[in-house]
Amino acid sequence: MIKGNALVGQSGGPTSVINSSLAGVIETALVSSFIGDIYGMHFGIEGFMQEWLYDLGRQPRNIIEGLRHTPSSALGSSRYKVQEKDLPLILDVLKKYNIRYFFLIGGNDTMDTIHRVESYCRNKKYELIGIGIPKTVDNDLFGTDHTPGFASAARSNILNVMQAGILARDMQKVDTFVIYQTIGRDAGWLAAATAMARKNEEDAPHLIYAPEFYFDREKFLKEADSCIKKYGWVSIVCGEGLKYSDGTPVSSATVKDKFNNTEFGAMGGSSVALSLHRMITGEFGYRGEFQITESLIMSDFVRSSEVDLIEAYRCGVEAVKLAEKGESGFMVSIKRTSNNPYTIEFGKVPLKEVAVSAKPMPSDYFNKEGNHVSQKFIDYIKPLAGELPEFVQLEKIFAKKNKKNNHD
Image (cartoon, rainbow, N blue to C red):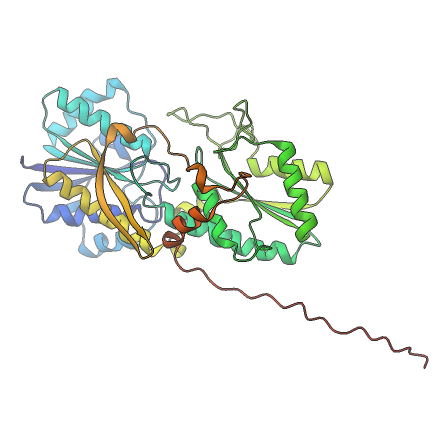
């Protein structure tokens, strides 16, 4: 094993537990026999090329410990797409700081970045061990049962839909429908998670629409109308990435990011929730609400999942342990070994299998209509979401009408 310094960075969207992974890396690296100084990229690979580096080994102990309970990306994040022309500069900076251990915490685009840097260094005969640490609220990384960040964002969504559903139920004489839009560009994991809010048939959400299925306007209106007739109102959850069969986004979004991903939260088109709102109002004339949280659920630490916090930290620890064994070109993975009791074990998956591609939800996680989830998915999400609050509803015990004639 070579001795040298370590570099860690955070990339892409933040989560409420990504800093817990960072703490796992730092604390494990501090006691490593092979790692000297520990540097942190300020604003990801973009900042690294400008040598914006934190000296993490000199951080006060309470700050490092506090990372485990702090949301967002403490190092500062970036969505910069590495170009071929950037790689020589990246190698020069790695050499300048004698960095031999390279850790990046992020999603599939991040895994593409570390894969390319690690491969380039190998081809140039520079010894660099590169390990990816999974992070994405979308939960769409290949090779892992779930990703740190997902469970907490899912829990936030569940509580949002649960409470908004109670509000909508009680306000149905004012607003007949409510539409909740969640992030999830290519996969419906976060939209599907809201099914945990539904403890009784009449509870929200009644309908869930995920990017795994093409959107059918007529089918949607029929299903929404059916719920309204049955319950007096309807709660609808939709993923931001819904598309028609021809590939056109339901949101009519047109803006692309540097990785050619559609920016559903950017200017350039109406949101999915607003589009669905207009469909229902235009067809039936009902008044209703639409709710869009965007990045709020990504940094909602107050409602984070305890399981998520623990696993995020352990992923950081496992990344350093892999590196100490000389493993390179892998991402830390989580393998579920049991639902009840919930148990996992850690493993590894080649970066090339994770980079860029997104993992959709399995078809058997949905019902046959494609507008809600199956029991199999409930079994999957339940241990991740944690205990949920119990709310009450008045029983339908009404006062008896007074039939006495006032003139008698």
